[in-house]
Structures are given as C-alpha cells and as structure tokens.
Amino acid sequence: MSETILEIKNLTKYYGKVKGVENLSLSLNRGEIFGFIGPNGAGKSTTIRSIMNLINKDAGSVLFHGKELTRDDVEAKSRIGYLQSEVFLYDDLTVKGIFDHHENFYRNVPSAAGIHEKRQELVSRLKLDETRPIEDISLGNLKKVGIVLALMHNPELIIMDEPTSGLDPIMQNVFYELLREEKEKGNTVFYSTHILSEVSKVCDRVGIIRNGELIRAGQVDEISDKQLTFVTVSSDEVDALVAELGVKVLSREEDTVRFANHFPDDELIKKLSNYRIRKILIEEATLEEMFMHYYEEGQADGKA
Image 1 (cartoon, helix red, strand yellow):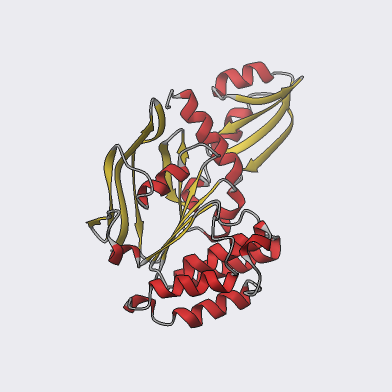
Image 2 (tube, rainbow, N blue to C red; image 1 turned 90 degrees about the vertical axis):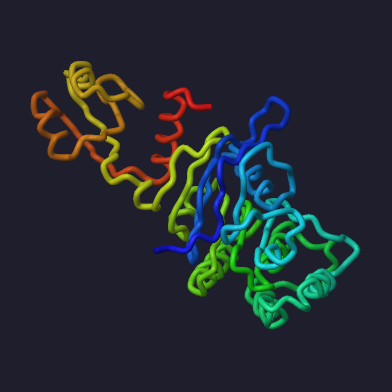
C-alpha cells in the first residue's frame, strides 16, 4: 500500500467574492510525480501557496505525514523544497551568496546532510556561474537558481509551480532527468504546470483543475482514456448519422464532421455501417485533446 506524504482536505480559499479554490481534496504518495494541470488562473498557485502557508486558507486542511502543516512548523518545512512560479531573490547578492545563505538554514538539519555536495552537483548540471550577481542574470538562469534552492537540501517533498518557464529545451531535459532521479530516491514531486506536454514526460498521476475545482484525477494513462477517440467522417447522410450517434460535433465543413467518440471501435463501425461513408478517420486523443474535453464537459455540466 502506498504511503501518503501530503494530503489536502477540502481546501477552500476566496479572494473576497472571487473563488481561488473550493473544496479541493487530493493526496500525494511517496515516490511519485503528481502533475497539477490547468490554465493560468485555474487555482494552481492558490493551492500551492495555501499548502506552503503563504496565504491563509478559508477552510480545509493540509497534512504532511498525517500532521497539519502550519506556518511555524520549521522541522516539517525543512523536509520540503519549494519553487515558486516567479523567483525573487536578493539582487545585491551573487548566486554563490544566495546558495551560501540557503545552506546556513540547514546546518543542523539531519535530513539535509550532503547539502553542499548536492548544491555543487546541481550547479554543474544546470551550468550556473556562481560568481554572477543576481541582478545581472537572465530569467532562465534565475529559474535555475530557484531549482537549485528547491533541491539542494535533499527534501522528501518537492513542490514546484511552473518550473520550466524560462528554461531552454536542453535545460528542460536536464530538469526532467533531475525529477526522475528524485523519484527514484523515493521523494515526491508536486508539479504544477499549464504545459500539457510536460505531464506525459515525467508525471505518474495527474489532477486537472478548472476554476478552482479538481475535475479529474488519476494515472496519466487513465486521463488519456483509450476509449475516447476523435472521428472524422465524410458522408451524404451526415446529419442522420450525427443524430443517431448522439455525439457533439466539434467541427463541420459541408458533409464532413469531426466528433469525440466514446463508443468502442467495433460498435462505432457497426453503427456507421448503416450509412454511406465516403471517408473515415479515427484518431487516438492526445493529452491536450483529453484536457480540453474534460474542461468542456465541466462547463457543460455547469461546474464553476
């Protein structure tokens, strides 16, 4: 049975009358990378800031190893690594100065043993120049500094908000490899992103958030439901065909339609055999298409 590392129960946060998140519940297990996906403004950062106690929750709880994670729990937070979406650091320090300062926080923390060696390894792999002043480095290098700060103290829970923004493709691949290594060590990663292609590369499970509510969660291959395909059909009888199948047309051009299909392939072909079909194309849904499908379903159901 999987060990639960982080559990969020009925998390709710409003900004005045504006909903940030509402009744959001999910759990993370040891040694997994959990992708938390949704467009900008969906509630990802609100969730993460609530976990880290950077903002006050209106309701709900966040448990780390079964214990409420509070703002002043220094011991628990020493075992957590955090990368915010936008990295803000002391401009008057060098990269080395920032890392030295960070090391000092963990001098007497047993779980952070080997922090200097880990720092040196990360600096080398991410190709950082520690002599550069923070105020002079690019946004990409600033994000790399943030990654080092999140990982160098060997945390068992790593929370990352839009971690690849600003990284070039080569550094993104290095970053993905670092996450896989953390997973192999048994550490847990909470990975928030709006870039869907990243999820299939590194994540084991995924949760989809829309307007502050978790609308679907499961294994990546469960979210990429193999029963959902996208079908394009050309037929003189396209209106009757669509009416019998009861499908929602995604696009139409004269007598050619494209629709999302939940029927098994053999059942679909049997139904279509009643019509004169000139052309048919059946495509497996991509993660991006699945994501949009769930979002549109949620809107159709009236979920806010």
